[in-house]
Image 1 (tube, helix red, strand yellow):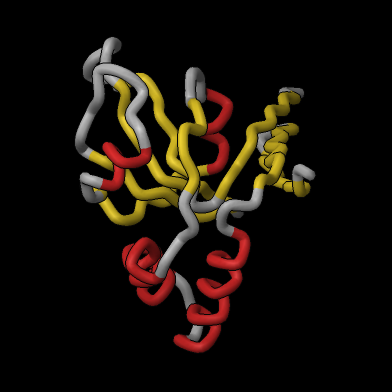
Image 2 (image 1 turned 120 degrees about the horizontal axis):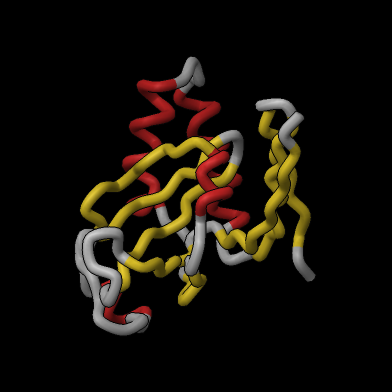
Length: 145
């Protein structure tokens, strides 16, 4: 029986830096869009030699607007750092919106309402707890005051 659990601070709209897999001296950037049964984020192609400022990040554009990734990947995270926050806007969620439109059975109205909800949560800090027991992964979150 395998049991494990991890927790991380999630900020929808938050910019996270992590060491680039291609260059251990460089920092790569992702922007968190949503957390549910998966992580949803945009990925930046630009790497930085030191932790970038929000101005440096926003001077670039995402290389990939939306990546869904199995929530279980957080068990392998290391050295991921929240470095900046900015409220999510419609343009930030275009890739996620296309994913929801083509990858789920949600109606346009349900998608619009869901994206409004996501934007209302942006810049709020949550503790996300991911647990695994016997191959089943569960996710829960709680606001951080």
